[in-house]
Amino acid sequence: MRLVGKLVVQNVVGITTVGCVSLVAALVSINHGFNEQVSKELAQVSTNAMQDLEAHRGDTLTAARFLAANSDVLRAIEGKDIVALRRLANEALTQVGLSEVTVLDPSGGVLARGHSEAAGDEASSQENVRRVSKGEAFSAIENGNGVKLALRSGCPIRKDERVIGYVITGYSLAGSDGFVDGVKQHYGVECTLFDRDIRAATTIIREGKRAVGTRMDNPKVLETVLKGGQSFIARNTILNQNYDTVYTPLGERGAPIGMLFIGKPRAHQEAIVFGIIKWSILSNAVISAAAIIWAAFTGRRLGQAIQRVVSLVRDETEEVTRASGQISKASQMLAENASEQAASIEETSASLEEMSSMTSNNASSAEKTAALTQDARVAADKGATDMERMNEAISAIKVSGDEIANIMKTIDEIAFQTNILALNAAVEAARAGEAGMGFAVVAEEVRRLAQRSAVAAKETSERIERAIASSTQGVEISNQVLTGLRSIVTKVRQVDKLVVEMNAASGEQNRGISQINTAVVQMDKVTQNVAAQAEETASAAQELAGQTANLRQAAQALQCLVDGTSSSRPEQQTTLLPSSVPGRQRQAGQIRAEQRAIGIQTQPRMDSVAERAAI
Image 1 (tube, helix red, strand yellow):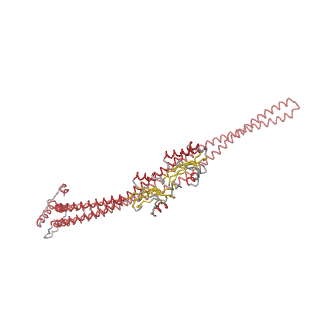
Image 2: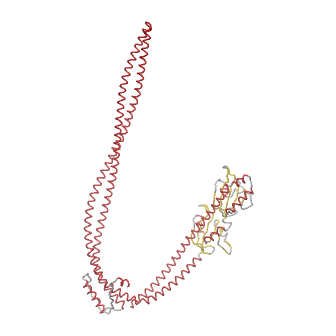
Image 3: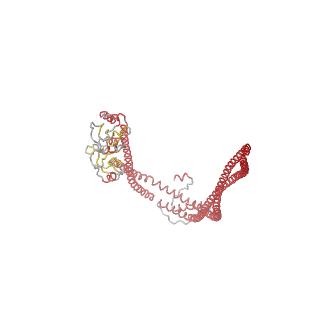
């Protein structure tokens, strides 16, 4: 038991040391966590404060647009009613909560102010007047002549697309402490508005007064915020006091005119950390005292428990020996099966390689077939196009034949009328007697010519009708051929589509078989590795069987050390290979007899799960 006492004392010292180290690490982590949490909270407060400024800016712009569109303002400007303008501007101040409202004429002269009785002066040189005189509404944080830092918005006053004046509204940021005090009251932090590097409005108190007019003396802050246009989040010393701070640029992007400061003194956080340190040291001392008391109380029970564990380890060593033999046998069988499986996988891989070669040939043939089918489809399309052109030509011939037939009908009608006129002329010549004989001869000749013309026209008309009939038949045949060619083209396109799909499928099949072949090769490698590992497992199981004997001897030596005794003679080497149950029982009885011979107190074997769990 003396060894157990020493171990317990050493463990108590180790626990105390680890506790101190853990305490220091925990304090460092807590301090770091506090710093990160405060930085996140201040960054969020700064974001919220900037959103409040944006809301005030929107209010000023809305008020400016409202006054610019107010009909009363338009009438007052046209009527040069300064009293009415001053009244309307003053109402806007009280209703919206603005700091300034100014109405100007188109040349920049002040007509009326809601925040002052002054009027009639020239303000065209001011930045906000120059911006609004461009004819567009604006809103921005700017430096003024009277108030150094303010939110100002401007809007032109129009009537019938003509600018008749301007209205400028503003919210003072530096002329009052309303904004910074509101931030401090709402978020519980210090707030300052800087005009460049000068504090224009602040909640920080110095010698009983607000530190207005003092300068920022940290060049890193000025470089980051005013020159770089970026936020600065870090610790800073302000008027000899440490703060966690966030500085955000004010003004248009790329041209800051000031800064918004949000900060929290570190004195409160340092007090919290110091309290945690005191509490942690006290807790660590209490835990160390409790550990010493626990060690004195449980030392004896721990020694008894170790003796029971040693006995249990000695008895279970035989079980491990038997199990190692079974593992060795199973590993050998696994190695044999893995070797057979590797041979089968090699045969499968060879077959897959042959299939892959055949599939590659099929894919190549499919590509050639696709190319030939594409050429056939192009030729069929060209034939169909030529057939359509021929059909159009035959149709044109038919139309021309119809026109010629109409002309021949006209000629036939002329010949018929000429024949009738010749007959009438012959009748008149007969009536004239001898005086009309010559005229009768001429009339007869004209009648003969008319008859010949009629016969020729009839014959020509018959031939044209036969030609028209042939053209009509040719058009019908051409349409039938064109229909057949179009059907052929459709079929060829379908065949082309099927061949393309077959080509794609052959490619996919080729890639799939290649992937399967790769997978089989990997399976072959894995199977060979399994076989090798199974052989190694069998060898390790045999080594485990030999090491269990050493484990039993070590358990006996440990029990001797716990009891503070020594063995009078070394224990004989015993064989712990798996055997029959009676043999194991005889070995266990022999070991207990040897333990009694050297004075070792033994404990009965605990076979139940409940007893092992209790240990």
